[in-house]
Image (cartoon, rainbow, N blue to C red; front, side):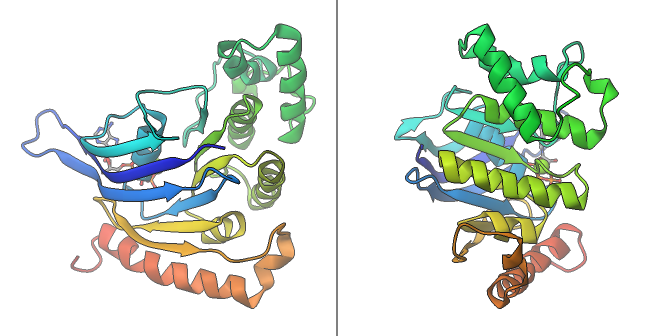
Length: 265
Ligand SMILES: Nc1ncnc2c1ncn2[C@@H]1O[C@H](COP(=O)(O)OP(=O)(O)OP(=O)(O)O)[C@@H](O)[C@H]1O
Ligand SMILES: [Mg+2]
C-alpha cells in the first residue's frame, strides 16, 4: 500500500535529427492514496503520454522536471515495490509460461519451491492451466498478455502499473479478467495505475478516472467513481454507470479529435 505523489511532472524526449524536443507529459500532478490502496485509471487519446507517465512512475524514463515520490521518496529507478504490465508484453522466448511467471520472483529472492507454487497459482488465475510448459511462441496474443499479468501479480507488488493490460484480449475474457483483478485488489489492496482506452473498463475498475489531454499530456479532469464496492457486472447497466460513461466520453472526444487533427486545437 504505497502512496504515489506526482507533482508538476514534465517528461521530454530528445529526438535526434530534429530541431525540437518532444514534450510527452506536461505539468502532470496527481496523488494516489496508498491506504487502503487506490485504483486509478488513466484515459486519453493515443500518443498523449500515458505509457510515458507509467514508465516514469517505474523509473524507466527520467522526468525533465517535477517530482515523483513514492511514500515520500523520489523514484530513482525500478524497484521491488512496483510491477509493470507493459502495453506490449515482453516474455522471455526461451522460457516456459511457468518460468516466465517465476522470473520476477527470482529477483526478489523467493525460494525455488515457493516460486513454482505461486507461479502455478497465478497461471491458473489467468486461465492458463495446462499451458505451464508451453513457450511464448506457442500461445495466442491474449494468452501471452495474460502471462505478463500473472508475472506482475506473482511478486505481490505494493504498486501495480498496468498499461492497457487487457488490450489484446477478447471482450469476454477482458471483462472476466477485470472482475478477477478487482477481486485480487480487494484482497491485497495494491495501489493501481491502470491505463486503458476502454471507458467502461475504467469506470468499472476505478476509484478515480484521470482524463488526459491530447499531447502534451496534461490532466484534463479527474472524475471520482462513486459506485459501491464490491462491484459486479450488473453495475454496468445502472444509470450512474451510464452517466459516468457519458461524462467521460464528452471529455475524451474533444481530446481525441484534437489528437487526430479533426478540429483546430
Ligand atoms: N522513446 C521515445 N522517444 C521519443 N518519443 C517517444 C518515445 N516514446 C514515446 N514517444 C512519444 O511520446 C508521445 C507519447 O507517447 P506514449 O507512448 O506515452 O503515448 P500513449 O498515450 O501511451 O499512446 P497509446 O495510447 O497509443 O499507447 C508520443 O508522441 C510518442 O511519439
Ligand atoms: Mg501507450
